[in-house]
Amino acid sequence: ASTTDTAGGTERQPKDFSKLASNKYECDQINFDFYIRYKTLDLWARYQDFQLRVRNAIIKRQSLDFIMAGFNGVKRAETSDRSSNPMLQDVAVGWLQKYRNEAPARVMSKVTDEEGRTTSEVIRVGKGGDYASLDALVMDATNNLIEPWYQEDPDLVVIVGRQLLADKYFPIVNREQDNSEMLAADV
Image 1 (cartoon, rainbow, N blue to C red):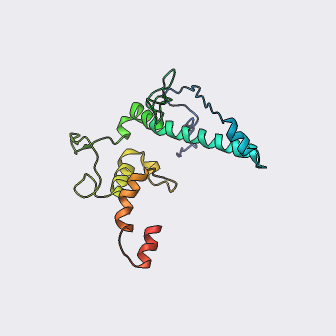
Image 2: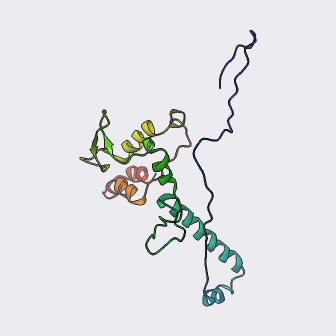
Image 3: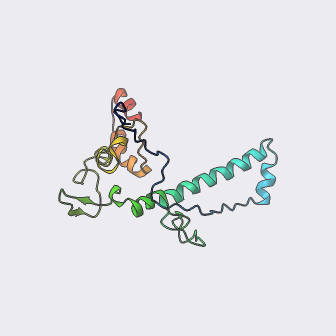
């Protein structure tokens, strides 16, 4: 958005919103090879929605693999090795690795002071840690790692691992409490 007084002959200076950034992007093939044993096919064949069940199983596995590679991928190998890389680290460069490679200033991987000196190589959350709570860590990341115009976006979502949420909520739900407190913990 901008303003221009065009009465004096000044021309407006529109911006090309479709302009691509200088980041490189490659589209590489990822194979999804599945098989279903004959015994399983024979077992499922009795269901009226047999084809739907097979299709849904394949789509679910593909989706889970995409997500796994997206979060854990660090490189793309010509031939991936699932036994050595069970989290699909060698299938593709994932979303987090892309940030590490192309926008390291937006990645919180250690704790630094105001002068930029590293005070801790590991980010600790909880009593005696770098952040008292997971909420404080998220707030710091929101305020310092993303552009200001995204910080107030009501659609902003934080994705955290199951164990981090368990660390946050287990002390709350693992005690006797009034019904109102139990309801609040469930929300």
